[in-house]
Image (tube, rainbow, N blue to C red; front, side, top):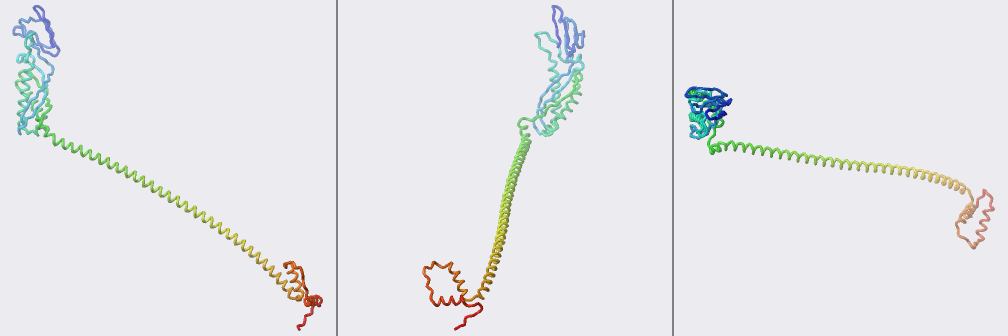
Length: 338
């Protein structure tokens, strides 16, 4: 921004690096350029400062589509002044003293460029429908506005160069925009719901898988427990069978031992019996050849040991005579039967 220092009869001007100053004294160019510094007399001098840096001009306007829908267009135009002297003669960029109205050169440029953008944009949008304007309106308007502004004769003669045009948005009215957004929102909501359902389905499937795994684990544990019980039962049965077999073997061994003992005892008894029988047979053989009296005497002898005590014994003559006859009878004789 240029600065001006005022003295009683003179003033001093100090320019800026982005401002092109044009000093007119009595209608003739006295000084011009960027970064100038000079003294001047305010009474007969006119100073204009034209910016030479890039300028940004945002603009917003409305247009009607071919299907009678109102759309708003938001654009941004970048420009610069390539002929500051011509600009200073066509537009008001004068440096005003204190108390006077400011220069209106920037407002004039904004009005000119804004009206040009709106005019060409309205013509372009009027040939398209709302759907086409929303779909391809940004790119089409950018090309149309760039070509139209760069080819405009007024801007060229004024010394204004268009560096670029950016169309930021082409939007319908709020109600129409909400109506247009509704199907997409519904679709997005449907997609979101489907995603939620899929997540729930996946969660349910995972829960089912977890439940199946838990059930399979329980079944496996039950099967293992059953196998364990069966194995324990088999082991118990095997132990009982082994114990029974051992008892059977022991019983068989005991029976065999008892049989052997009984057989031995029976054999012993048989041998004893046979010995006794042989002795009895031998005895009977001896007794067979004895006399009756002798046998009677031996019988009495044997019976005496088992008879009770006899206090009195009566012997008859017949018994005594018979006994004595037997004692004194010679061996080898036999008694004659009467």
